[in-house]
Amino acid sequence: MTEVAAFSAPVVLWSHDEEERAGKPLLVLLHGYGSNEQDLFSLAGMLPQEFVVAALRAPMPMGPGFTWFPLTASIDYSLEAVKLAAEYALEWLDTVKANHSSVTLLGFSMGMAMATTLLRQRPADFAAVVGLSGFAVDAGADATFRDAELDGTVPLFWGRDQQDPVITPDKIEFTIGWVRKHVDLTKVLYTGMWHGINQQEIGHVGEFLNHKVLSS
Image (cartoon, rainbow, N blue to C red; front, side, top):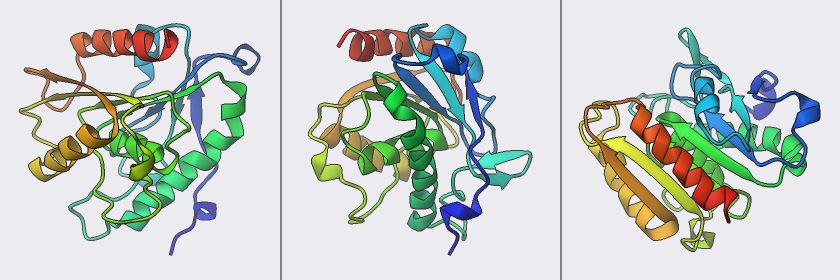
């Protein structure tokens, strides 16, 4: 089985130089399948400027970009692959989080699967989670997913279009059940966005971050 050591060193795009980051809240961006760390980085300028933004590249090469784990419908998919990607991200986070007042995760598509996985494996580590056009993975009874410790107090924003052609109904069904049980949910549906992000949603994310992270 692949191990984290087999992955290359983390590639991270930062909004601030190292000497400007200390003590500020951290917002970690997790991109989707086949993309890279630059994909979501343009959002940094549209979100509250109090945050230091770090965009982390997924560890597995995939086409012109990268992925966190194989697509769930592929023969290569496994929960172990999801856990391995989470371990990779958490090992990197452990090297930087002490420098920040809080850590918030923002994931798009498969990046939301990663963001919610990190929360489920480290329930006390994150101030909030933002999930855009994504899902949470069905981890069955895997003990590393500590859902029982999530008592509904961590704020989670979930934005999506009901006509999203990419995220399949079974994933949506599982995610709806999971968020209702385990987080403080802000759920917004958008029309005409499909599998994407629009200006209205980013405005809502900014409001969420101001209210749930910066004002708390």
